[in-house]
Image (cartoon, rainbow, N blue to C red; front, top):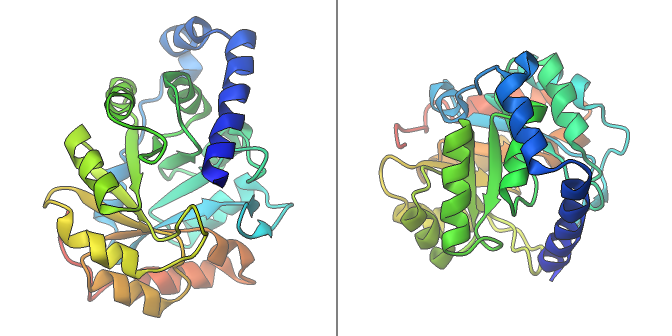
Length: 271
């Protein structure tokens, strides 16, 4: 499965990065360098405060399922445009091989916009949390399919220690139960089956009733139109993560606004 291959590649990259810059060096930078003393922004709070459907707008150049989407996408320009169009937060892909992203994209997005930033990657180790914090991210993605039991709990604790929010991604009822048991308070339901790449928005609606009150629910993948937003909002979804639809659009700002406004009447107070 492609997820396993990506995880293997990230583990190899991680070993190299740790050898070049030990974890203690990153920890020392966070503690002593004034440039990294900014407290993280309230990622979940920004989603809750959105007047309509909260849109996490994504900086995304490519993906395993779609190939190249927009290879020359500038992270700073995209993040600034998303902010001006009313996004609640920005997601930045930092995986280099399959998504053509980098941590430098987070830093560039941070310099160009005031919105909370999500480092979207295949996070496997506390080292990546330190990297995210130093680059200017306010949240990270944790994928339950890659993180079982104690590893997920450890990384959630690591996020809390650094002030980072954790968007815990699930695709099945079993993964959702694991996320809840581990203490996740921000859950993303991925509508894309990472084994087949098939997308079904019904995945979110099927799992949404299992999400306890107080946990903020985000629907990820396959959101293309205001109709999709209304469909999800009717099921209690408060936020959506949208990448390819915005990146491919001739007018991303107009598309983003239409998605956000589509959830105004249907959005509820869940989460």
